[in-house]
Image 1: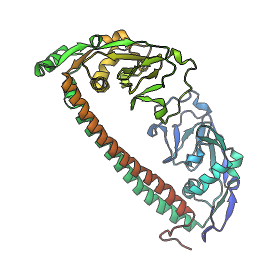
Image 2 (image 1 turned 90 degrees about the horizontal axis):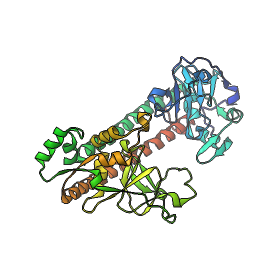
Image 3 (image 1 turned 180 degrees about the horizontal axis):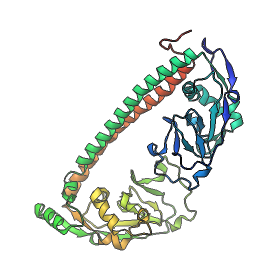
Image 4 (image 1 turned 90 degrees about the vertical axis):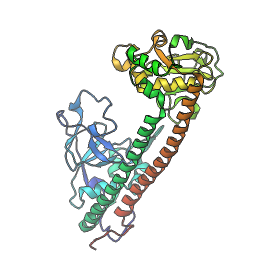
Length: 410
């Protein structure tokens, strides 16, 4: 840590921390470690929906003021001093702060500074594709500076105020993005969503739509699509179906995928313009249009549209909330979240089919709105990134004395 006029004492973390291993209190609240927010209740975190071990008796007890370290994500700043009494994963480090020279709140900020992150990276073992693993011994070998209590108090007050302002700005940006998406969601589908609002499984609702739109038709998918099971083209590129991006070349997606099957000849062929959907996640909107000839999983369904219909219109139709409700009604499985939509059920579902010109108009409107939303989303993401960088920079500058802190007593 860079020396400053306030850093008059240096010591290794092994003199500051005492590792704790208390367990057997499964009744306590589950906590999570967030790079951004520190230690928070699991119910408030992004991991709230993930499964946890049924044996909570093996989880580590955390007291208020204890340090918690996610050793596999420490280089991302996943550590902090807890304000809560609860439980954390047994894979984490937990420790009490035994050195009275440090205020817990100051140590929290110090250990999340860029200077400390650099030390974690230096002392950790890299674990591909994107994790680092640090041992307790290496972690507590790090030397830290203990400035005066007055300096620590000033830093804590200053950073608490600044980070609160940053959080307000981040919430405003999230709200802007949410409102923009909601606005697009309301306008995106145009007449399509309005026509479906009466409910796909209500004949009276369909009749009302068809009476108001005499040129729209209600047609079963069996008359609109044919199932394709073409194989033996291992030379074609692999495709992937996702909830957000539809059908994309795997090479264009930044996510890390499992290794594809060695025998590409067994993969299904999707031709450009085919509708492809994930049987297990169709009810969630995992459907899209193949952008080119390619290969998809044998667990996907490839539906080839008949002449005279716009596949992109039907992709958007299938993604509407009303249609996904109908898909879920026709899907079957052992448990609801494992429901699959098989071809026989898919072809029995009826779709609202406007004239081709109307289909094309709806698709053009959606493309235009999506382009505007994507541009707004990129701008918001850029601002969020700048705030994240500022958060990290101001923490580092404050704890290392690189900026003037109001009311510092020297």
